[in-house]
Length: 143
Image (tube, rainbow, N blue to C red):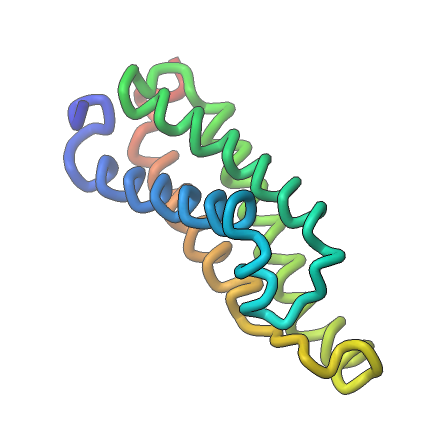
């Protein structure tokens, strides 16, 4: 299993990424009401939150499959993860640092909303981890 990831470093990075995705899949798909409450978000966002959890769950399931089979030819999985995290990072920075403070902060209906850097910091970390994995597994994933 570890040899499929060119040693323990890339294997551990993959496990970290997989566990992080599992956490967000669980939080948004199964524990969605509590997850929304944590940020003071109205439960009307439940459907969109669960759709996000569904997409993340797909990444988790494919990641588990790759874990127990092989990384050979999986470039599209890792490329999709990388692009998704990169877009999440950019949109997260814009949403948290520009859009919310300039357009919503303190406005009616947003008094209880809690906006944190969790909107983009994890995505930046996942982007970097995915880029490292792509680099480290380039001899296997592009087969």
